[in-house]
Length: 218
Image (tube, rainbow, N blue to C red; front, side, top):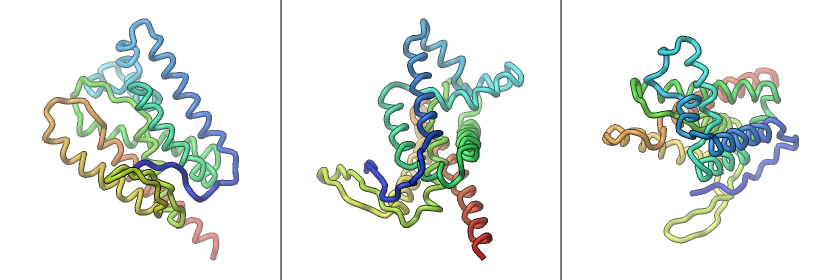
């Protein structure tokens, strides 16, 4: 399933969402035009084996890595999900709140993947962990929204589904794939645990936000 649009407009200009997309596009440009793209990735991507080797300086990659991507398809798919879900979360949290939430989601996602990839020399990169946090927040706070979704099996069709169903199915697929990844000894691939960690972080922040909203409405 691939989401096309949601039914709940934010009614606010998603400035931060757009700036994040532009920042990721700019970093991708720097990446593909670098004299040595691999060296660029190893410098700014999160390499678990290098964390701590360079002192506190090495920790910066927990942030910088979320602006890198492994090519156009990786970039476009991530930014598409951010575009669909990010505007609502940005409207709920405010611009500064959304910036902090997005960065913390990415860091939380990378931390969990780091635990499961401890000592690996393979770079971790991509915004999907931070975006998973956005999905987790959306799951809690926009349950009444519906997602126009492209279903590719058994044939291509477009259906409108509850956001809770779409995102729950997405999360379960990440858990299944993350568990299955223990059997993969090749290394590399998709950082499933980053998706799980980011979604979980966004879910709990979303629950806290929802609880505060209910409190103020009393």
